[in-house]
Image 1 (tube, rainbow, N blue to C red):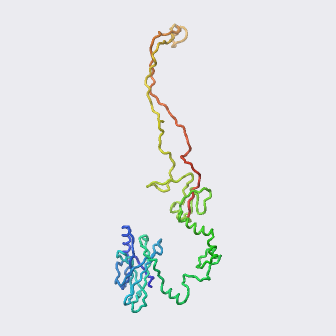
Image 2: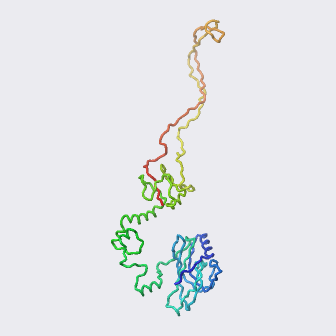
Image 3: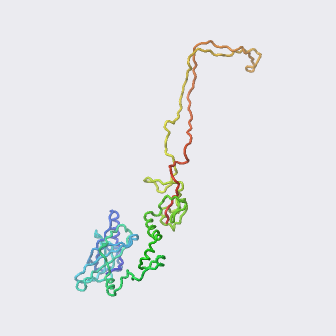
Length: 377
């Protein structure tokens, strides 16, 4: 088995990733190729677009090692040739024929039928990409790759493989309680000890809850004491270092105050988390408008009647009339009785109407008071 090569993604491979992203497709690494060419030290592997001297190829499998950081492994078995040879270059080809990666070989030997016992030459190449989402995983889980050296050592020495532990190497109660990371067997009593309700809650349920209820989730809580790992939303600061995921939501380190507030789904184009003051919807009161009116001139009914009046005469004596003259009251007299009417001008006027206040300080619905709590960390 050949491994440990310094494998470089070529510029052609980077261009293939960029094109795949633009076209909305994936990058499929289809083959491992080996060659006889020897790339000089002053030449860059990243600039290669083909092998210097192609010799053999094989369909490969791509396995994810750490997709979060873009690490992958390519494995392939080179066919057994008639005559053995040494190879000095290795590459990977995409299904579009692009030389995706290139590595110098140490000159490892591929055994032929004349000098081998039928063993294939297995090649493993690791590579890292910044476009992890584009890589197609083609690992065939039905094929198990076990290094032949490990198998032969197991048969020869009659010892357990390093991934197994001795039957007598069981964990103790103290190791269970301290959550030891040592590789040991668990006897049945220790199994029940490890599966206590408290441990199940912390290890299983809380882990599951973290997936179901991500950091930043807000829930209603009918208590003034927040549960462990949660905080009541009342405008308080939080630790940006201790709660890095929450800091992605509120980078200013302040939990927005939700006291006296509720949630409403945002419209497209609106900013999530923005605060809006409550308002009364624009409306009117049907039939309650008041306008100006002109009543014009009104005339009384026509009937038979008289009017009384008082007569006076200036005499030079008596009460002063205008500062110089004096007058004497002659008496009260009536006009002749006849049939007539009177006209009165009323004119234009308006009335002011006042609508009395009714209701509470805010628009509300039937509700119960709760605390809004947010998941931390």
